[in-house]
Amino acid sequence: MTNQSSQQSRFVENLVQGVQTSDGAGVKLTRVLTQSLQKRLDPFLMLDAFRNDNPEDYMGGFPNHPHRGFETITYMIAGRMRHRDSAGNEGLLEPGGVQWMTAGSGLIHSELPEQEDGLMEGFQLWLNLPAKNKMTKPSYRDIAAGNIPEYTTPDGVTVRVIAGESEQTVGAVQRPDTEPLILDIHLPANGSFEANVPPGHHAFLYTYRGESIVGEQTVPDRHMAILTDDGASCVRLKSHVATKCLLVAGKPLLEPIAQYGPFVMNSEQEIQQTLQDYRAGQFEAAVVQAL
Image 1: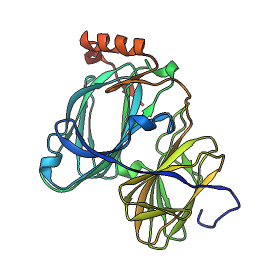
Image 2: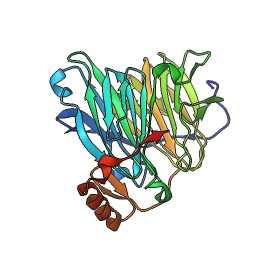
Image 3: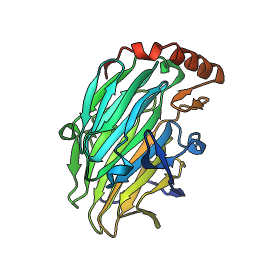
């Protein structure tokens, strides 16, 4: 909806500029949601943003690596990335598409670019799993750009609903327990938009083009705004220039987090068991089911 309602709006609690780093085989990226923010933004564990037009910054990709205990959501804006995993699954992630992978009990996968030049841009978000589902069977789903529901408001704001629901548009993915809301919002110059966010959900906004405005606070390009957690049920956005941003929210799990690199469990003992399982080759025999 674009007309402001009487609902109380969330505001910017803290503005975060990501840390420049590299991962995989030297892929340059911006780590926006870091380990120090996991408790504040529970159930989200990490957000990486990448935007490179120099092939040397992305050609190495992310060769074989393991995961256990959480979900990865990869959203591609530009470029092409090939997924392969230890269960024999393979998929090509193209512009506007999403790959949703539940690592669960563990698997090994790779994400390698299928281009030699041009822009490579996208995001990877890590979403925690509750303790009861840490050891669930891994699952995997490719969602093509045309299968992500979207709508356009009368004021010209386009909203792609990756997960959750917005203005009676049901997203491509619904998940229990964490109930994630993931919206890709495109505002024209001098645009405005009001997004409903469930009270009690932790929420943040990441601007990847232009400048988002929440209340009176500007959220510049490549910055994340942690939104207040005060029971408010919506977020009001404005823009002076054409702007694109991700709005992400989820229901906190309120469980202990134990992380060792690509493994996220609830205790140090579980991490040690994970390392034993990985060294014993158990991840290589993972059976992945359709999500």
